[in-house]
Image 1: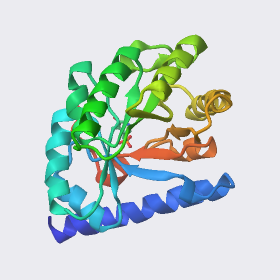
Image 2: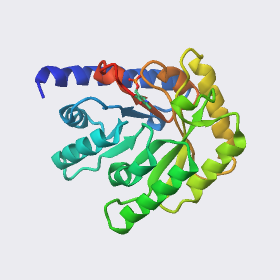
Image 3: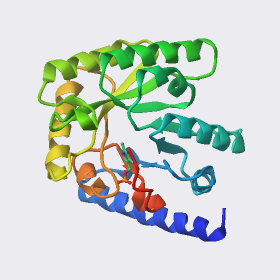
Length: 246
Ligand SMILES: *Cc1c(COP(=O)(O)O)cnc(C)c1O
């Protein structure tokens, strides 16, 4: 960690916090209800350590192998602290056990079979004491039905309902809310408004407060305007990633 990188991260974080505060104020919301989740994929553990020292205690990662290595390194650096790692990328079913070993939450859940695998893996980790609490899951919705980006089609409410019920009914999981990524070239505010309406529809069914994982570097204001409770921010905080980013 060079001092220059630390200063760069501190400044970017301050700018971002101000963006979140301003967007919350514009929406008449409290910024305490909006989690700023730094997305640290492709960046080294030393950056995460620096961000933790700047007050961040949760981080988003999208690739299992990279994340499990980084989490082990960072967690070992702060043995007395609880750091919450969020898996924001797609999870293959055969990675469920690995993910349940380090993740606090999984954001891109869109298959009943994946829910079953995550439940089994989290249940085993709870039993053997390697995780302290159920795995939080967000159901990912697709706003255009394109399977390439993942997510269950928001226009298919029966399929959405089935996934939410499966997540809510799984003993070792906690159904935490909905997640979406706006399709390219589509108005993000429209997407987030549809997502919020879907959350409201489901909120009538579930007693726990359902969150919205929505908004990234370029559209977090629109997401906060429409009720996001977790903005996942990479580039605006960390700088440019290599172009091969998933
Ligand atoms: C990489 C990633 C982000 C961060 O995107 P930025 O535009 O760099 O802020 C957010 N969400 C998911 C699912 C990602 O994979």
